[in-house]
Image 1 (cartoon, rainbow, N blue to C red):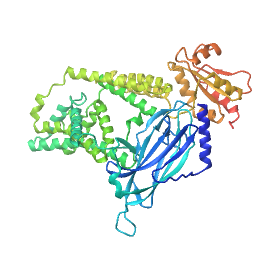
Image 2 (cartoon, rainbow, N blue to C red):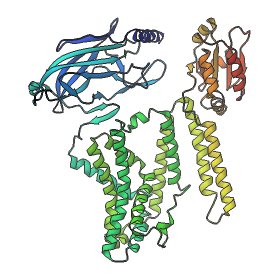
Image 3 (tube, rainbow, N blue to C red):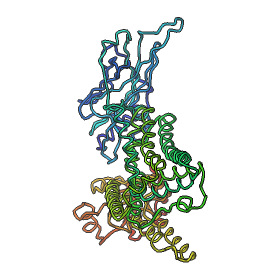
Image 4 (cartoon, one colour):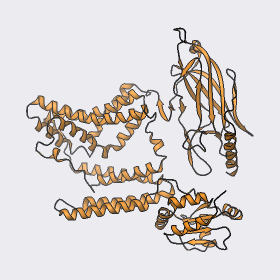
Length: 594
């Protein structure tokens, strides 16, 4: 690990000492991007037909363990992510198509997105007209600039920024190699070829997905109420009933049009998609999803209910007319989301991975699938009597779905970093208790004053628990794992050392993390003073930190913080939870790191 860090520091210095190192290759040749001892990275160009369209394949080859950084956000330094840029006086270029990245855990424990092994990046070629003639240029030179950083699990090679050139004759494209990539990306957004099965099949599956939304436990009991409400408003005859039903279906389609619009905005204006894989690398998103699933599970168990507006359940004329029917349809689609969240999320993610036109059409077909039963029932309301009654079987199915959501929530919480896992779990329990208070401690006959007091207390419980247990979004202090060798080395160099003894099951440790180590002033001082911050995890009895806590430092339990200050005869110890101000005073006394 130290070797890799030293080489990475050398790479950063080398990168800052020069702007561009150019190596030009003749057609078909391979150039070397970087080398260190037996580790090397090469690249070559090849004209290809990419799904029938002309392109240049930038082919990377190197040692087996080699990887390149895919995202600027997780690269070791600015400008170290892999970039490809085409330049030509004869051709234009489309968006660069990168392969789907994988993940790599570096020696510090951080998970980063990388392109690993041998892979290919495609640069689409667009023919243009000659400036002085109305003829399309078919032959010309292409220069490809490549920059980035390549590393193995042990070392990082020198950063590179090089160019490779080739001559391309579009007139010979019929002889080029045909390439049909399954999944590539441009500017962070996925570009996938049309599905491997016919479009009719894909759209049929989308229609069935929309149709299935109507059998969800959240929608089924409401369906007859909504349909009868529309039929009663259309007393003028069957034609009016059909028109009102069409307006209701339009409201459903409006909801899915909003989803399709979100997909278009993400891809066209931001050049990206809502990739669920990327989002699940974000602990904040994962924790939020877990909490949301817990809340939805409580809804399935009947702990609280989503009350229908009076415009739907009452027989007054509120919400009457076509505009009311459109609004009711939009609301019905929203009501389906608590039970159909997984279906909608999967369908939306799939649609984003298709071409924009195909994705938009698929999302709207899902809406059509949900709207069709309402169109049929408003045209023939007598069919309502033939629908299965929403009895006890529906309630049992709904509760079973709740247990499934809880299982997924537990899985998500388990994927969180150890520092935030316990906090999210405790908050979920407190939030569940607060929701139980909100929904079960009051009834229709409860006095208004009592109802308000109970629900205010429930909200306060949830808010206080959020501040106390949910981890902060910012990264905070960069903690090193407990290692006595590293600690002794730092002390011999007169470097201050801060050791935090903690455990995942320790509730007081969560409070210390929130009240002390997430403070902005503490985080800033630890960085400014060059303090070695060590996390001593004692969750399991055979961890090194567990033995050190008892045998070396003589402490009976956690939380304990030990601070070694250069020039001080003995270390400082804090065993409580609210020592942030004392720690700040000691940090301010230290000299700034050089």
